[in-house]
Length: 338
Ligand SMILES: Cc1cc2nc3c(=O)[nH]c(=O)nc-3n(C[C@H](O)[C@H](O)[C@H](O)COP(=O)(O)O)c2cc1C
Image (cartoon, rainbow, N blue to C red):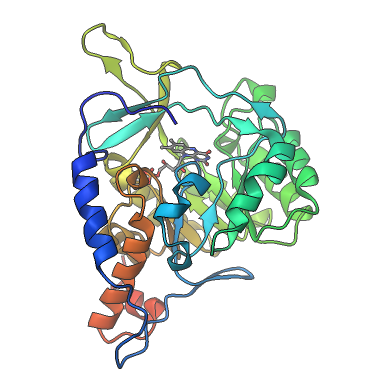
């Protein structure tokens, strides 16, 4: 990843990160060492049981961060989106800070399925958590090619990233078209035995409609949502900061938007929903669980605090223990109807 430009702010203040890191590693994990057993944080996504509901958002955590993260304390890992063929990504700059967030136009560079299976997947499999492979495509058929090329590789789940432009249909995101989503999802489901998560785009007027199309096509769970399209100008030149001019906005700035979309999706479908967008604290995670999410994904927060997922997982356990709840799912019910 390229360096973040502009002044360090709430997302990427390195000094704040150092302090938080020291505090995190100084605290012992809540391993049930005392009299009471550790609360049961397990959640289920179809046939996949996670030890807790915390996992990374695709593209924001990879093997290079693994030495900084106790991966035995997170629910799962999610890979960066894989495309069928090698791609270079967008021109630099690719990242910049925005108020309470970040905007990126990384453009999803990929080694292609071959290179992914050979060089990247083994590094994810070496971590102490189930691996969910994020699959992308620039046409319906490309998703299915990736799935065909993944045959024989070992992983625990798939996340279908439908926030990719459909080059066969004028470049609009596949995820804005319920029929295209249904075709991609049913094709992926037919090609694998592992649970299929579908990561929705926020750029739709009715997320319920797309969510139902994914559910009816066989999705095991839905991730809500990808980053929001945005733009940042350099105040000195009045020119776009990003080489690609536009990018995806993420981080705390998008949390209320993602929370509303998660809530709306939970109302629309029966399958589990995974909240994603601006989650950086245990309180954020509880907000998404309170509106009905089964699990959460953490993205931008890694840039300042690579250990943030384990920190949130420990926080969930500590809240349950403080409320004398032996199971997270029971404790979440006490948060009330939203
Ligand atoms: C640098 C960067 C790279 C990303 N790459 C991907 C990707 O490869 N696939 C994907 O589905 N989402 C990708 N995303 C979107 C995130 O997975 C997530 O949906 C979004 O950032 C919102 O979550 P957050 O606010 O916690 O970051 C990326 C986001 C960032 C910031």
